[in-house]
Image 1 (tube, helix red, strand yellow):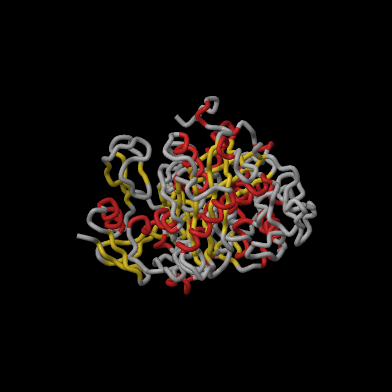
Image 2: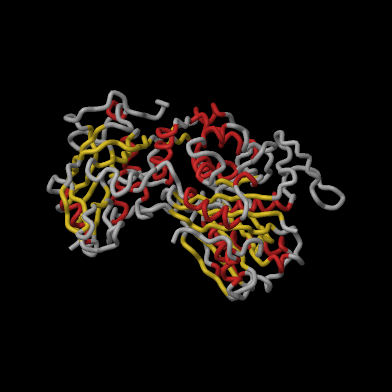
Length: 173
Length: 417
C-alpha cells in the first residue's frame, strides 16, 4: 500500500517498494524522529539509504533520537521556485547537526538534517523569527502531520536550550 | 585505491587533442528545436576542424534537462557512427566526456569523436523546474528530503556550502561579487555574449536577493544554445586546419564522499576539486602555478571561487582574496572565463568554457580585433571595453567543471605543435 499525504497543497506519495521511507515518515507521525541504525557497525544515517555508508551492510534497526541540534548552515530564500512557497518568503532552509553522532565516525561528519524553520506549531516561520536564526542556533524537531499516517520533520528554535550569545548570519562577517 | 599512478603511460598525456569547435548563438528564444540546434553545432565543429562527416565516427552527448540523442543528429548529418553514447549529466560532463572520448579512441572503438550539448535552457527547460516544461508531480523519494522544503533550484541546493564558506573563512559578498564584475568585463569584449554590459560590485550587491548569499547577479544567465567539440589523436590533428589544443590531463566526475547526500560529510565548504586536484596535476605534469588561463565554472560567483581554491590556485580559505585581487582579469596573471562565462556569455553546462580555452590556445579568439591580410585577427591586447580578449602568448589552460559541491571534472590543455 502506498502512503499518501499532503503538505502545503502538494501530494506526497511513498510507494510500497520504498519501505525505508515508509518507515521513516511513519515514525515521524509518532512524534519521535527515528533514524536507520546499522545492525553491523552501529552507526546511524540520514537520509534513508539502502546500505550502510560506512560498512555497506544492508541490515538495520530504527533508533529514536532526541531531535535536538545546532544549525550548521542555512539559506534564506527570497525568490521561491515552488509557487506554494511564494507567500512564505523569506523562508529558511536549515541544515542542522544532530546532537547524536556529531563528529563520528570522522571529525567532519554529522547527521545533518535538512528542513524549514517553522514556529512551535509547525507553521512556516514569520520574518521576525527568520531574522534571528543563523549558524549556531539551537533547534529542535517538530512534526507537521501530512495525513495518511505520515508526518514531515521540520525545525523550530529550542526554547529550553541555552542559546549562544551571538549566532552567525549573512552580513555578520 | 584513490591514488592514481600518473607515472605510467596510461594517462595518455599529450596524445589527444581538441581539433574542432562549434557553437550556435546564445539567445533567449532560439526559435528552433534542440535537434536543429545540435545539428548546427556539430556541423560547425566538423567544418571548423577541416574534417568531413565521414571522418567523425564517434559521438557523445549529455543532458540534464532537454537535449537530443546522437542518433538523430548523426542521422540528420548523414554520419554513420562506430561508437556513440548519450549520457545523463549537466555541469562537469564536458571534461568527463573528453576523457571517455580519449579512452574509446585509444581502445580502438572509433577514431574521432564529436561531443555536443544542445539545450533550450531558457525557452523550454529552465533549471529548477520552471519554464514551458514545468509540471507538478507528487513528492516522493529524494524530494522528501529537499524539494518538499522549497529546496529546488541549484542555488537553493548549493547555498549551504556557500554560506558555510563565509562562516568558516570570513569570505565576504563583496569579495565574491568581483567574479561577476570581472566576467562582465570579459563579456564586454565578446560579441557573442548575451550580457555585454560591465557591472560593478555595487551592482551585484544591490541586485535583488535570490537566496542568501546569492543576489541575482551572483547567478548565471539562462540561454538557448548548442555547442560541440571534436576530439581526436594528436597524430590525426597534424593535418587539420587549426593548431590543436593538446590534452594533458582529464579528471571526470570526481566526487566527495557520500554522493547520496554530500552534506553528511564535511567540511561542507570544501568541494570536489579537493579530491580531483590530486589526479589532475599529477596526470598533467604541470601545477596550478603553470596555468595561464582558467575556465572555472561560474554557475554562480561562488562556484568559480570554491573551485579555484580547492584545485590549489590559492590556499584553502583564501578564495575570497584570490577572486577579488584582480588576478583573474584579462591582462593580469591568470584570467578566468575570458568569454564572460555562464554569468554573462550564456549557459551551456560548461562546454562553451572549454571552447573558449581552445580558442585561447589557438591564439585566435573571436573578439573585435581587426582581421589582417592573412585572414587572422591581429590581437591588440588592449582589454578595454569592446576590445581584445586574447591572452598574450598563452600555452596552458585549465577548465574546472562543476556539477554540485559534490562532483566536478577538470581538463588541462596545452597549445599544440
